[in-house]
Amino acid sequence: MRKTVCPGKSEITINEYGKVIEYAVKVFGEGNVSSWLIAGLEPVESTIQGIDFIIEHGGIPFLAVFRPLVGSAFEKLPPPEPQTILPAFEYLQEALSPRSKLLRSSSAGCVNCGCCSALPET
Image 1 (cartoon, rainbow, N blue to C red):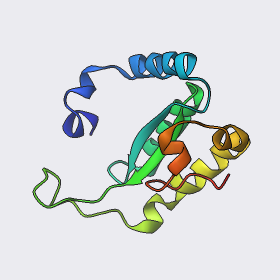
Image 2 (image 1 turned 45 degrees about the vertical axis):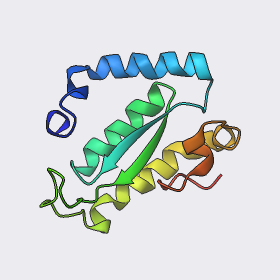
Image 3 (image 1 turned 90 degrees about the vertical axis):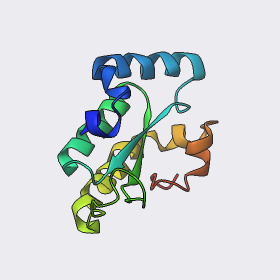
């Protein structure tokens, strides 16, 4: 799915992504690096693996729900049913709760705003 959704980015290996997240954390500090995941394009287990991967490399995962946009290559795909992606959001809540203090002290724009994703309440 990654090759279909992000053909250019798919040239970068997952290992390289992990290294980039780690480097960004060294540069910007803990709690100031985030990475987006789109929930609903792949099985929820895949999304949960993505959450773990980002956290293991020091980043903060953001989940956004897939919404098909008219005129996009995916406009004919249905949005996910809420019950199918809810486990990913519940898992995110659980996975980030030990880092809630870090989230509160973040100077990163997305982490501070939180409007586009369901980050755990801090």
